[in-house]
Amino acid sequence: MALACPENNNLKMRRELALAHRLLSDFNLSEGCCNHLTAMAPAIKGGGEEVMLLAPGFDGKGAGLDWSMVTASSLLGLNRAGEVVEGEGEPEITGASIHIGLRKHRPNTRVIMHTHTPYATALSCLEDPTLLMVHQNSCRFLGRVAYDDGYAGFALEEEEGQRLGAVLEHKSVLMMGHHGTIIVADSVPIAFDELYYLERACMVQILAMAASSDRNALKIIPKEIQDLTLAASLDSLEKYANRHFFSLWNKWREAGSDVFH
Image 1 (cartoon, rainbow, N blue to C red):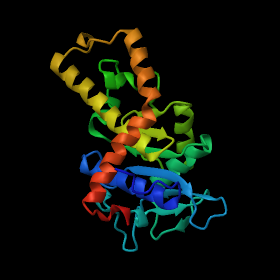
Image 2 (cartoon, rainbow, N blue to C red):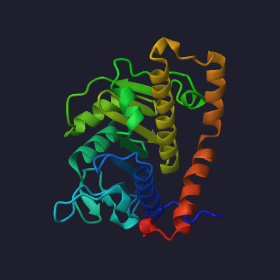
Image 3 (cartoon, rainbow, N blue to C red):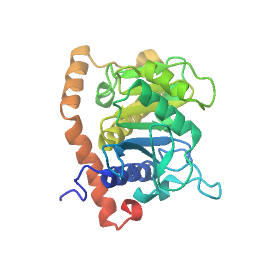
């Protein structure tokens, strides 16, 4: 089945990001309307400019937008200064500031997904939040996870985003102590796939730890198998991320969802 919107433009990015919100809500991987997904897209007005797409934090009456109701047209577009130049509404300050600040440290970052998914967040609350190589999904993230223990309450300034970007460095996942995770990727399908499988890896680890009641009882995959699994995962990352994401795209499209409007 052909993809519904293959062109690389503002509308395509809006549709992909809107669907990511819906999917995370559908999988119970969102937390109210407090987490933040953003993607860089060509500005509607053209001219080679880009905007940062994100769901509005507040509408004209002060309400948020539940992720189960996000549509392509509801997303805001912010310029580099954080000003709304596309759409109607007001960005939520923590989402806008962290993502703008992180992109100032890593200006080529296309997609950022910050969530408080249950198992990854639970792992981030442990004294040792290390993702252990106990499952093939874990090996996908071998050497790709950074850890931050600098939690100091709600983030309201761009400087916090820049600090997080510095901790993340060149890696793709940031495990934020007492908080949640940040995923960075080159596309919405890859970011969604990474987030989904990171949560699955954390789930397996938490359940195995609970079953054994002894962290030392967990059986670690041999290092050479870890390396082989990582290499195979990265070699086909885009292919299988697209396969995963667009299978869900087609499901929602066939159901006549308003998410793409």
